[in-house]
Image: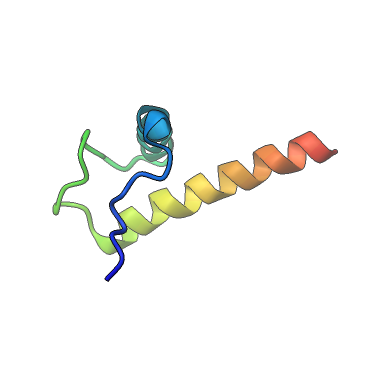
Length: 64
C-alpha cells in the first residue's frame, strides 16, 4: 500500500503548509496548523480546490 503522507520534497513542506493556511484563510475556512477531524469534507475539498486554482492561475500568468 502506498504511503500518501510521505513528503516528496521535504524541504518544501513548510512553504506548502503556509500556502495551505493562506488559501484556507482567503476562503474563510478555519484551518488549524495541523489538519483536524473538525473539517468537513466540503471544507477540506474547497481548500484543495482553491489551491489548485491558484497554482493554475500562476502558470497562466507566466505564459501570457
